Length: 71
Image 1 (tube, rainbow, N blue to C red):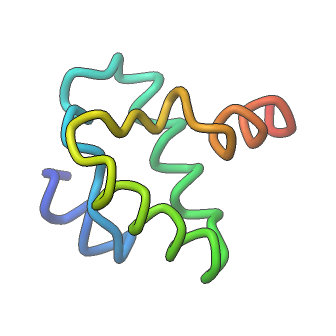
Image 2: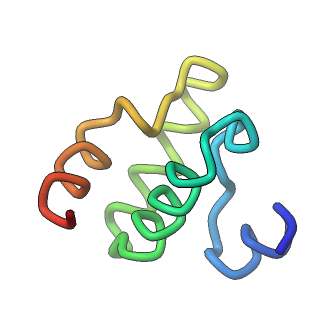
């Protein structure tokens, strides 16, 4: 599946540097984004747009917490 298909399936834009992530991390990011509720989706979208290129989902509190709880 290419980036556009994944974004369409998720209903969210993937992080700008998504292709640079290790395939295992890419899979975790996709699982994380699929599990976001509507408020978390809005926060993700706002954070990504406001922070631009400095946005890093891997270092975000939400992703870190989710990863700890979903091992």
